[in-house]
Image (cartoon, rainbow, N blue to C red):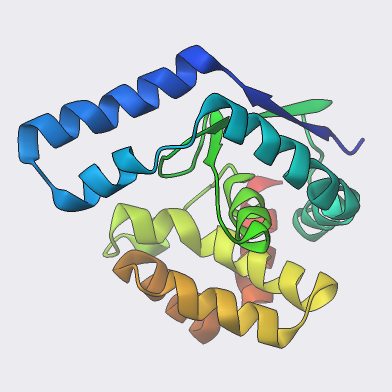
Length: 191
């Protein structure tokens, strides 16, 4: 069974995220946070965004989710995956929460990234938690990109996400160890 993604807007949830930014700004007076607040999307803009990205995601949804399941030899546990959209946030996976991206392809890439429950062995004990939590994800992402997109798209995503030290390190590990080796080890451990 391949689940369906259901995009949702919750004004209460969105207000919570905006309130967090406001509290953060009051405490630290960070100019970047002030910019985020000044450009915080209205509820109508978020709902319009959902209407724009839904057909883009639906075109790729089946292929992406099928490929993830196939690569990992796992079955999806839910018929519906709810994705909450808010004005601004750092995306996270539980509850699956996304924000508006100017580049809608980047939205699709990030949503694919957040679909994962990660399992990590002791092998990467010396790495930062954020690095460890992205090794399997980036291995699968690597394979999905090569199957459904192309090497150029993969390289672009690696470059973009490598601004973050932990992401850069996890991509290095995947490149060094090989995406298929990491995937195979995960499948062996979890069977």
